[in-house]
Image (tube, rainbow, N blue to C red; front, side, top):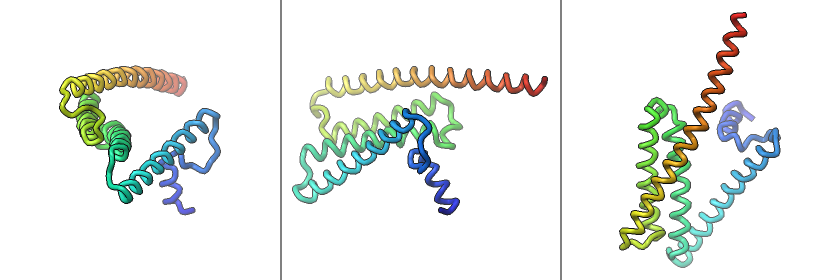
Length: 165
């Protein structure tokens, strides 16, 4: 295996051929791999169904859910883990993620007919639910990252104090 292949294999982490260190990590790799295969199976099913019968309600619904969930993962990486966007203020990244993901989810909801198109209350509850979930996840992740940052800062201070001694 060339160095380039090793680097690209390592980039995804879960595709490492090395054994996982813990049961938890092995399960998470299994969940990720199983999810990937599930999505691929649904995509194949939807494409075959569309080719054979044309688009119907179930294929539109399935493809809209797959698109919405994939967009969430992609936007998360672009807004929070991508080198360029990580230079932005956290609030700007959060707003960017929130608006772009909401636009995609609303489009998916409309195309996949998740909600009655003519019912404004359904769409309002969709938007409110999205904002509540976004706020709760933001609070959760902010708390986790601030705790992690604090532990890193403490470890750095301990390291610096040991180096001085």
